[in-house]
Length: 421
Image 1 (cartoon, rainbow, N blue to C red):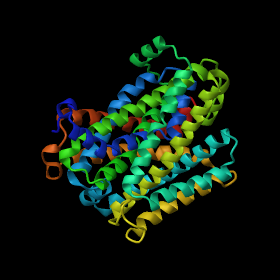
Image 2 (image 1 turned 180 degrees about the horizontal axis):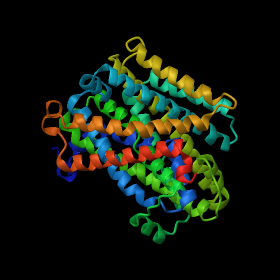
Image 3 (image 1 turned 180 degrees about the vertical axis):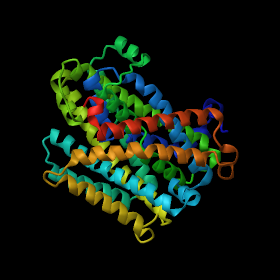
Image 4 (image 1 turned 90 degrees about the vertical axis):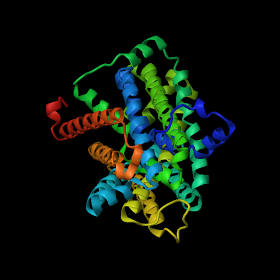
């Protein structure tokens, strides 16, 4: 396998190579902290204090494992995830998987435009202005931009997640109890705790991410001799992403939980931070929510479009023109219109849509993990770059955990009385 030692290759050529190849890993992991993710981490800190900080360690390890395998599949085969699924399992299974992914991602796209509306309303701007404007900006960026230009914009947008780190520090955290909470697992079988644990895992390791990162690696035409850079791109992206999650939890635990306040959304968290940690902490949190939402409102429809076009054998990629890849850009445009349009409807059942999209995410992820493991261990496909025993053990363990969590999620939804809800 490719060496993980970055210092062994530290020279000017490889530094320049790193800067040219970096992108898919950091962008994919950063988008994971979308409106739904920020809301989940905010609620974890606001309702449970430091109780879920310990989960970020195994979640980060699991995220790195899954993202690395997806990136390796893209680098070795030069193909997207949907392409490989169609080739190995046929059109019928590809259709069912993509249908589930489409439904889940449409719900997630609604969540992103909802996050745009919520964050800008904090600044006193109506959603009837910001949502259509943001949708048009997202569409124009993708349809009129090249892959390289868009990737550079996404990398810059990733830097703005630092606003959550600053917000967390402005809450004046008490580091002694925080470090103890990180190192001390807390297990509870209470329904609320199980639901939040499912949310923490599900919002961090989402099925769409595996489709997107593999397509990005393939679209960028990264050769395997340069894959060591992509692997570090993945690791750095995952570490930064969960560092942001850590500070979101800390900010809300130090302020909202400590004062016994009740919140339901990331918007509530941003507003509550004002009187507790200062106006600037509140504004930075709100700006971070806007950045995360518009960032993900671009990536999620793009990921869905890549997956569908690859699975159906249609031309796909940001370096194609509208005329060269009409299905690719038409599907992307349709998802943006539906996602933004439904947010503007009065009394739309947005909470139900967002919730059931997460149910589909939870149910879909174990299937995605099994397919990844099947493909990554196929020597005809991967040659000497198949998984080692440790990778297989850890990923099968993750898959089993996700199956159990998914079953708990379904049963807690269908039979809430059995879980004390």
